[in-house]
Image (cartoon, rainbow, N blue to C red; front, side, top):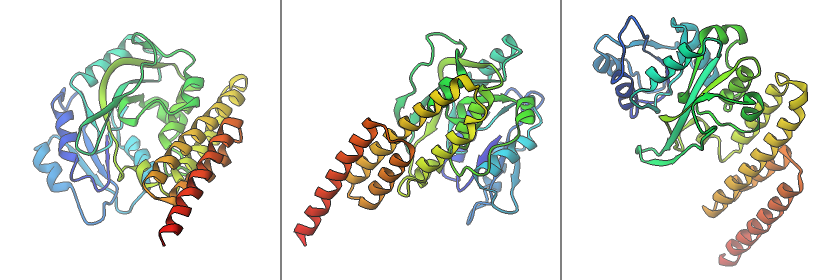
Length: 307
C-alpha cells in the first residue's frame, strides 16, 4: 500500500522499485492511496506506469498522515501489509525475504529490515546500524524499540490481523505515528529482524518530519508518542524506557538546534531547545542547552554588532 501526498516527482521511482519484483496479481496487491494532494492528481501517472496492474484511490478530503496510513490498512486485502511511502524505495528481494521470514516464524507479528537513508536525489547518506549480528527474532524488542525510533516505515511489514487487533495509527500524532505503532506491536508480538538493507528512506525538507523541524513539532510529537506508548509497555520496563527515550530525543533536539543555529535560524534553534528541556531535565541535557543558549546569545550579539 503506497500512501502519497504531492509525490509526483518521486512516485515513478517508488513504483518502479515495486514492479521490478512484482510476484503477480494473485500474490500481491499494489495500490496508491493519494491523500487529496492539492494541485496534482497522480492518477494518470499511476495508470501510465502501472498499465492496469496498480490500483488507485484518491481521498475525497485530506486525512493527514495517520488517517491515510490507517485507510491504507483498511483497503489492504492481503494477509501481510507493507506501507511504502511514495518517496521511498524497496530493493530487489525485499518482498521475497519478508515472505520467507513470516513463513519460517508463523507466530511473529511483524518483520523489518535494515535500511539506507538517501537524500532528495537518491544518494545514499548512511545505513542504519545493525540491530543483531544475524537475521532472527529481535531480543527485548519492546524496550529496544521504545527507547529510540529504529524502524523507518518502508522497512516494516505487519500481519493484517495484528493491525486489526491493535487498531490504526493514532491520529493525535502528526508525526512519530509510526514509532508509536511499532512499539505498540512489539509490546504484544515477536518481531523479526532482517540484517540486509533492503529499503531506502528518503530524507528531505518536504518529508513529514522535515516539515516540522523549524517549529520543533517533530520533537513535541515524539514526546507525545512516548507518553502514548508508555501505557502499552510492561510495567517492569516502562519507566526505564520512557526516561531513556525522552533523554535521547532531547539530545536529538539539541543537535537539531545546533544545526539550525549554524544556518542562522535563531527562532528554530530556540524552539528545538525549548522542546528538549520539556522532554528531559537530566544534567547532560541541561548542560548542552546552556551551551546552546550561549552560542545563540553570541550569534544574536554578532547580528546586533553588524547593525
